[in-house]
Amino acid sequence: MREGAGNMKPDNAAAQFDADAGSTRRFFTVESANRSLVLVRKVVADIVAGYAELMELRRRHERAVTAQGESLAGEREKIERTAERLRLLHEELGDVGCELKDAVIGLVDFPALRQGRRVSLCWKLDEPSVAHWHEESSGYAGRQPIDEAFDTGR
Image (cartoon, rainbow, N blue to C red; front, side, top):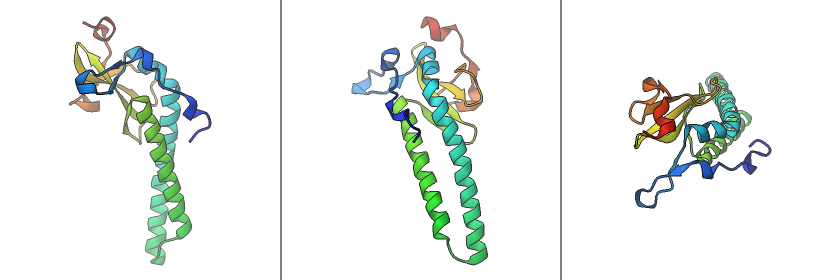
């Protein structure tokens, strides 16, 4: 895990919580999601790089096993260390309250409310800010620009 990342806590004051049956599901506002990007951007960049590394390690390991007929212990240990690092980074995103949707492009959803409905604010690593949303059921394909309904609560 990156140095200092464990010290950063999500901005709980800026978020709303689900009132259903004592749930602690966090809902982000556009503002709180954008503020969380200071940490989320770093974590997701590490995940995207780590995932690419893991896929390359697995490809090399598979080629070596195929060529030699046996697993190479050193390569297997690298794979396990990389996978564990990715698991910890994924857990860190969960602690913030957002969800990684795609480790290749760095796609993240932030639970939110729009006009009283549960939706997702949607962000990609190459975007400067959280500027899209989608219905929970539509996913990335249903992304739409954020509109005033998020800011006014209409």
